[in-house]
Length: 162
Image 1: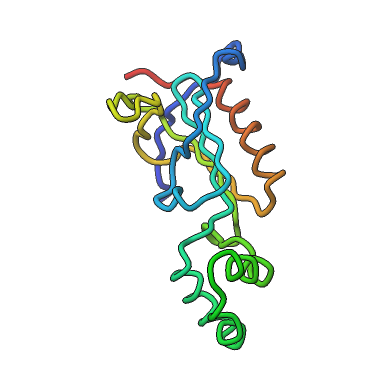
Image 2: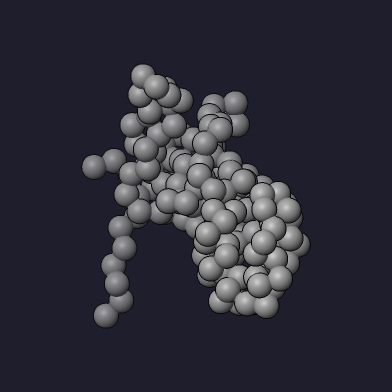
């Protein structure tokens, strides 16, 4: 028997205009987002569209990766420090994957309450529930374009009430 899914949106007569979209400087999802060098986050009506990528974990994690996939490279480069190690690692391995066969991803969530922390107050909404839409990419250009495409797609949708 097919799995039943609940629709959480209906199509709008007119999309939410770009002038009403709200942009944030923080990533909107991904537990390791603090190590992502690429992030876009846009609130489009009741939806939060978040794109992250260019995952650059701490050195210890990168050394484990190198030990597993190219141990000889690690032996030859482990003595390097700071930017020298980072440069050599980037040249050999590039950014880490954030999921299966993707270095960037965009997810859409229902936007929750905005940040009102006295220390921050950025207004970035919490994400409510599970992702409603998703796309993965391997190039920054595709991630930026894909983010905008999902913003436009979800600007045409209204949540189902009730």
